[in-house]
Structure formats: structure tokens, C-alpha cells
Length: 162
Image 1 (spheres, rainbow, N blue to C red):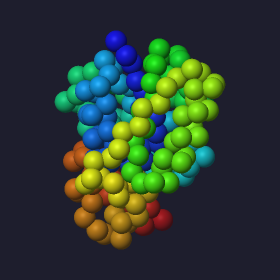
Image 2 (image 1 turned 90 degrees about the vertical axis):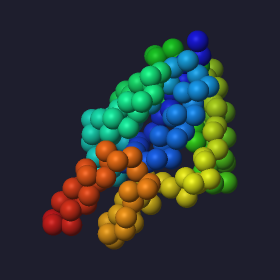
Image 3 (image 1 turned 45 degrees about the vertical axis):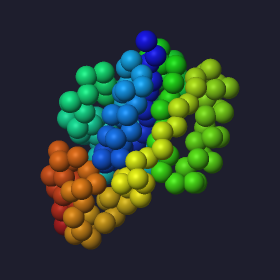
Image 4 (image 1 turned 30 degrees about the vertical axis):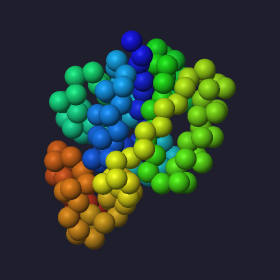
């Protein structure tokens, strides 16, 4: 059984993320969604919140589990016994970045990278963009799983009152 990890910040989880995991779950025996704990990125949600949101959004996919990790992704992959790192590609610039990371991960840990092209309806969706447009009051319900809307709006309301 080939085991894969799908690493990321996922702040917040989007329908594009869920789509990549659902498709990866059809390709691999087990998929571990690897939520980065501490990151240099400014995040809206704690790691525990991001893990919880993803777990709820993926309850319907039996061969997926969600875990938090720290450090190098390739080291986490090795710890989990994963042979593959799954990455989603939305736009052309994603490819350049992911190609470099794939080569580095193969060199550091002998782990392959499988890139899945985003479904057409999610090619423009990113966590950063979702937070930005939601902050302006736009409806993002079609861009995030249903369980993400309430916490997202709650965080944005709290951020606006500070």
C-alpha cells in the first residue's frame, strides 16, 4: 500500500484542498493531511483549529487522516512511512516552486512528489484570497467547506473589532 502525505498550512481549508485530498485518496492506500504547526506565515487559525476543520471536512473519506507536524516535510513523510508527497497545482508559478521542492525532497529523503492539477472550478482559490475577500464581506460559502464558514466569519469579526 502506497502512503502519501499532503502537507500545507491550510489557513483556512478550502474546497480546493478537499478536492485534492479526495482525488489523492483514490490514488493512494492512505493519505495523511499534514498540517504545518509553527510557520513563518501569519495564520488566522491555530494548528489545532486547522486540523479540526480538515478532519470534519474529510469525514466522508475513509483512507485519510489529518495530523499536525513541525519541521521538514520530508522528515515527517519518512516518520509516517510515506513514499509520496502530494501537491496541488493551481497556476503556472505553482509548478516552478513545486518542481524545486520536489527535487529537494527527493534529494533529502528519497520521497517522490505527485502533483495534481486543481480542478477548473478551484484554480483561482487560495486560502489567502478566501480570507481577503471574506474580510470585505463577500460570500465565500462556495469556496470553503460548510464547517469552515462559521469559524472564518467569527475570526474575521473578532479581527475587525480589535
